[in-house]
Image 1 (cartoon, rainbow, N blue to C red):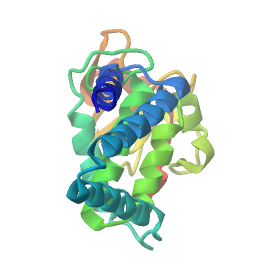
Image 2: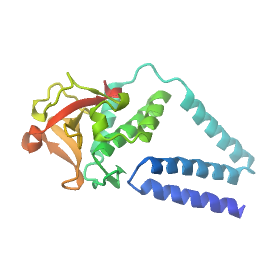
Image 3: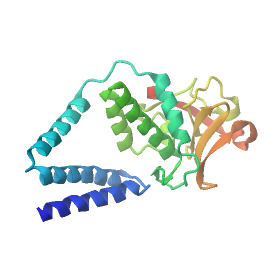
Image 4: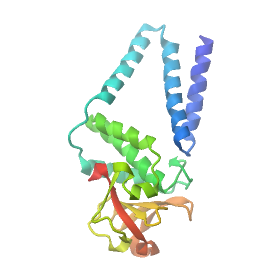
Length: 232
């Protein structure tokens, strides 16, 4: 019993520590998945002798698997998802810039738009009971997509706005909150908040901030405009 408790507490502590670390790559994600599995399994082993807890634990796992494997809804409320995405983007305002970061303890430009969309998809999935969106969130979380890939479609995750040619940010037309602007160099991505405001994780000032396009030299920056496939 003691060894089982130690295993559970150790795996849970390492998992919590890894969740707090802002940096993410494929190895970190794989470690997170392994620790989630180990922590869950060790908890189940720990409570296995308690019949009620055992039944409840197994039932929770089965219900989650049924939900995860169920067909997704045919249509998504894109307006609601867009509002969630913009709200999540704003929640990162002031967060420190960390290259490769993807949470509120540190984040970079592509991590900002991915993390905000991941959380929005999970919330929308739960609110609308749509397992398809939950699977999409897991897929987005697993794929380490950078700004260059986002500007080029990221294997179907984004699609171009208009004809897909590069234009100055100030000349962009028919933008909607949640649309993305990727610099032609592919080194940076910003997200539109509406009313000529954009949010970015800026490595020059080392934090996330909101930019007013009417008063910023970034308005002359040439960018590729894209949108997430879930917001089309």
